[in-house]
Amino acid sequence: MTRAASCYRPVVPAGARAVVAGAFGARHGTGDATLSVFDAPGFDDHELVVFGRDSASGLKAIVAIHDTTLGPALGGCRMWPYASEDEALADVLRLSRAMTYKHALADTGQGGGKAVVIGDSKTDKTPALMRALGRLVDTLGGRYITAEDVGTSVADMDEVRRATRHVAGYSEGGSGDPSPVTAYGVVRGIGAAVRHKLGRADLGGLEVAVQGVGHVGYALCGYLSEAGARLFVSDIDDGALRRALEAYSAVAAAPDEIHGLDVDVFAPCALGGALNDATIPRIRASIVAGAANNQLAGAGHGRDLAERGILYAPDYVINAGGVINISLANDYDRDRAMRKAEKIYDTLAQIFRRADADGLPTDQVADRMARERIAAARTKAAAAKTAAKTG
Image (cartoon, rainbow, N blue to C red; front, side, top):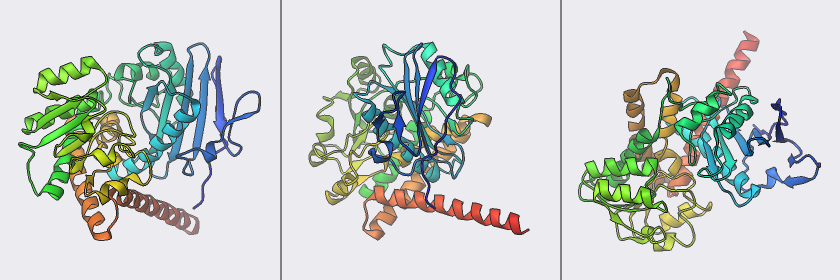
């Protein structure tokens, strides 16, 4: 079925301005096209892309809804000082598509969407800005549900909740911080990779290089340390790095060198693009498995890893614990979230086996499996609709 981005114009709160990417691309008030959405890197028949601006709070945001076949789009909001609107657009398009596939393989009953806010979370973020984001999300009428991501927090979602009910991961009565569940899914995924690649059933004595020890990376270090792994860590934030070094007796590594360490597992847990033309030739680990989104900088980098004999755990599969946690927010139970995150092990084991059998990179196999599940859901929905008409 062919789909195009919807030409949907939300009702904008007073003092805010929204720019909608529809059939004619994204345009500002002058009418001059400034972003060619359909030609943007990462555009993949997205259903809806909305640009939002609130001058009072300084909000500049983009919301991308990729696919809602499986349910309303659920995905976090990232705040980052992007160098340009084009860079922010490319990021939100890639992230929202990955969310579609992530939800499909994690069986959450949700679709894929994402939001990005252009700005420095340490200096530009205010409660008013987050409430403005909530108003923007609210104009979408439940088609997109936001949550925390890089640069945003549970406290920020509390502010968003003051302006919309279409938010998850807030503190009171919600699912709270998803980082522990995300990290648990990652460590289970590392376990699946270690079993497949190294033939080992445990992580004791393995050397793991963790790039980025923020919320999820730090929690991952905890699980790895408990399992007996030896840790090497890096982070551009000196405070976060010191905390990990002190808590887990880890060894510090430079952020631009950690991918080249002679270890068993390289775990990217910072921002995306860590696996690229410059880093892949230097990776000495036999396994790449981490929590970061968009780890592959380009479409061919999964194959580059496979050709070097490196087993790659597709990022949106191994880090799905976060969306699993948030998808259960309406009737939240942490033990239930952990049990569902446990299944990431089985999903990755299936991907690894199928990649071997088909002679394909693991990222391509994961994409194929996700598309198969979405196609099956569309076929089922179409059959039900036909039956209802003829019945």
